[in-house]
Amino acid sequence: MITWRAGVVVSLGATWPGAAEVTVELEAPVGTATAGDTVRALAFPALVGSPEIGDRVLLNVSALARGLGTGGYALVIALPDRTPPDPPAGPGHLVKARYTPLQAMVLGVDDQESPHHELLRDADDLDGLPVVVADLHSALPAIVAGARFAADRAGRPMPRVAYVMTDGGALPAWFSRTVAGLRSARWVEACITTGQSFGGDLEAVTVHTGLLAARHVVGADLVVVAQGPGNLGTGTRWGFSGVAAGEAVNAVGALGGRPVASLRVSGADQRERHLGVSHHSLTAYGRVALAPADVVVPLLEGDLGVRVREQAAALAARHRLVEVPAGADLRGALAGSPVRLSTMGRGLDQDPEAFLAAAAAGVHATEL
Image (cartoon, rainbow, N blue to C red; front, side):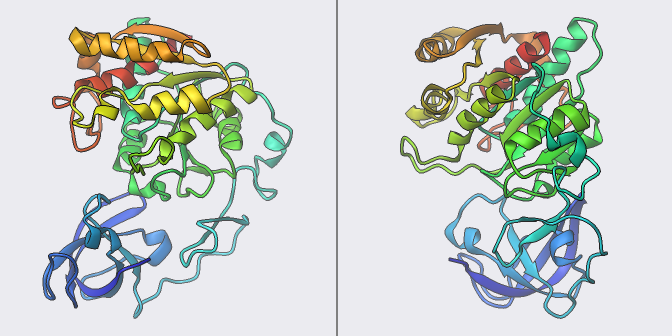
């Protein structure tokens, strides 16, 4: 289940809100690394404390041992010789990552002890709020870039955006440099972590209360719902974490919002099932989403554009297909993102269609 290793911190690296990189010298080999080799490790100080040079750390190296993509990190589990002080006493009884060794207790926006409890106790309506639903975390900055592009083109104020993070990928929002960068640039007003995910500006028990908090607490004009960094797929029809995108569409519909489905598109993926419109989108929106949504079909050039339109047509029986131009002006807006655009290791130049499709959803949501 877990491959454990121990080591000593030999240098400190980059930090961003909620996270700290360190370099650790291993006491025992793992994967291709031998004893004495160094590995990059990531600590979440709110959970384990802040490592310093010379600290002995316990590491979870399971993903490294298997060669999986966790950003190339070992994860710091504990500083056994220097545990952090107890957190200050305060309200909140929501437990996230429940019944794991690193379960964390937080104050939920919907918690009885929250100052927003009265506001949310009977809240039941999003009042037509546009909510863009996406499969991958990498769609988030592209959606917001598209929304801001549309607002600027129309001479309107920039939208107040809330990001509702589901628990299909990373559980700590702190893992995401994208969220940190978008918050710093004020492209995203608040991150709301839902389900088992945690570490957002606001915590919520469910996607439903996360959406309601975005509307009634944050005062968002636009909401983006997507899983955190990371994506679990098995190459099977139903075994992938993006199934939750369809469930998010249902939540938006149940609460009286305006669901906008962002298609996962690629012109560079070597896997046939993800070329054009990914089978993840076709399953999540075509089979799981029971509430009707606006499915945004980006108007792309060439054979890929034809393929995308033909694949998206399968969703027309339940949803409204909305075609949005995705040309050079929108790509220019994407190039101005304050955070790096990357999906499956590919950037804007390597797979522009992936980001254009997400940006097109942001354009349409802003125009609603």
